[in-house]
Structures are given as C-alpha cells and as structure tokens.
Length: 326
Image (spheres, rainbow, N blue to C red):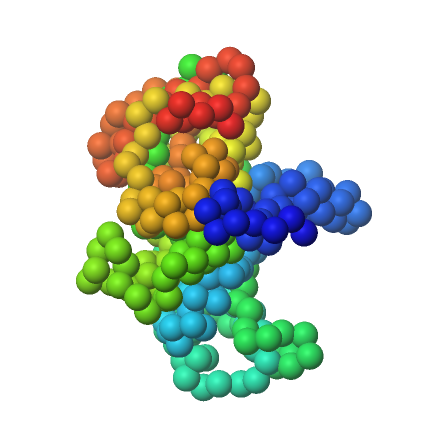
C-alpha cells in the first residue's frame, strides 16, 4: 500500500470501497443467478395478475459504526426503511410492507429497542406496515451488528415507470436530508482525521460531528402520486455512485445546470478529507436525494412537491454538473 500523507486527497477507494470492484462483483452475481425479465434498476417486479409486486432490499451500511460510536441506534431504522422504500418509489411502485433482518454478535435489549423505534418511525413516515423480521445472533460472523431489510410494494401495470428518460425531458430534483446512508466509509474517514464524533460540528456547533453524520435518510414516498399524475417517465434514487445514478435512466447527457445547494456536511467532508469535486459527486448525493425525468409539467410538479427544476436530458452521454463531466 502506498503511504499517504495527511494532506493527500482522499478517495472512496482509499477509505475501503472501490466502486468499480463493487459493480464488477454485482455483475458477476447477477450473471450467476440470472436476472428476471421483470427486474429494473431499482426493484424486482413480479407479475401477479393485474398488478406488479415490487421488492427491494438494502441495508444501512457503515453508518452503523457512527451509531455504535455514539451508542445511539435510534435513527438507523429510519435509514433502513428509507433506502428500500425510496428504491420502490424510483420504480413507480407504492411501498406497502417491510421486514427487517438484524444480525448481532450478542443480544442487547437497549440496542434492539432503539433499532425498533427507528424502524417504527420510518414505517410511519413511509405509510407502510412492519410485518415482522428476524434477529440472528452470529458471534463468529458479525462484530457489533448489521441491519438490513426488504420492502414490498404494489403497482398497477400501467403505473410503473418506464425507467428510461428521453432527450428533451426536464429533470426535477428533491433535496436530501444530508449524507443519507451512502458513502459513510469515505465520510467517516474524512470526518475523523481531525475530529471525534462527539466534537462540535464546525459549521453548526449546536450539533456534534456524529449527529450530523447520523441525520436519517429522507423518505420520498409522498412523491409517488404526484409523479404519476405528472407523467414522470423515470426516476433516480441518488445513492451508491452519487450523480452517476442518472445514467440508470438511459444513455443520454444529463445537464444539471441549476443544482440544489450543497449542505454543510458535504463541505465539511470534502475539506477534512481533501476530496476532489469529482470524487464527491461520484460518491455522495451532494444535497439532492431524488431526481425525476418527465416530458412536460415539470414546473408544476416541482411547485406541488417542493422540488426544483434542475436541468434537462439531451442527446449524448454522461452527467454534467457544477463544471464536472461524470
């Protein structure tokens, strides 16, 4: 391993997550098990007659290490619900139920209670039912805990998003609540170079560094009905891969010429880790957690839902944002 000076530029791969390797491993898994014809980029879709049953599964990731450091697991359940239901919404599917999987090295009633409170809060916000789950004690497999879950949803067949934008479409974006539950491996590495989790957050001293990193993921289920009504073709939940997620909407040029403002937490991570602009936008949502593409009525959709028209879809390739070509 090359020795890195304290002022060297930090990347996601330096912190321990290589996106290219992760995508290659995922592709290998999909190739081995096969991908169903009803699967899109955000959810698996099963034909159940006049509707689709949608399924999405995801976890909280290394955000759990921040929770462990603060001994505060009260919000990670919200993240777990959010990361799953938001994927269903991006597919045009209405989430209806959620099951969780909690793996621990040893049982802890206090931790379990806090996790459960977060799951309940997330389910209430998303308007879904918690229909059970599983707790596994795996002392030789897990250190601390891991939390994941699966959301199920339903959609009429004609209501599911096509999943592909078209040249000329307008892009509408909705603000994130912060880092959400993605890129925490890089964010933690940067944030703790010169600070502890209980230190005051330099850009908002009423909160600690850890509290800012733990800000729970925004839930976007309230967007589904108005997106359907306004004829959204495709949507992106901005998670792993940051702004390159827009490429999931088809091979076009996504010109984001009026992006939402960047929250202070990203400025802090970038400054502490000397992270490049490109690496930040390839890793984090940078203040925009959800994006939709639609042919007309974008201003009305934005006004109705608190969104913002942020750009457009053109012929070409890549994502253009803040002077970057991703």
